[in-house]
Length: 118
Image (cartoon, rainbow, N blue to C red; front, side, top):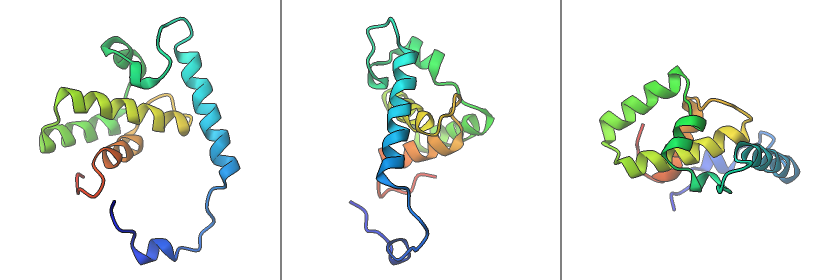
């Protein structure tokens, strides 16, 4: 687990409450259930290539980041797929239909903690 810098620990900005986080998670879960109403898919982890293509669209900034990461890190197809699934969840938590650069960057960091990727 990477160490947390002192300035992050000493940060006095207001933090998101547990109640607020719970509400965002419940909303993201509803979005996911609506996305897969009559399919045998119960979570993003179960998405196949067709669902990834249909539900994991990226905007221009996301495409640029993906190209940069793929060229720089040489992601395998499996890692690329997992990255999209995690980014879809993060975008849902932000109530975003398209996957922009921020959810992708967060997904990249979560897939490789402690490693400089971007």
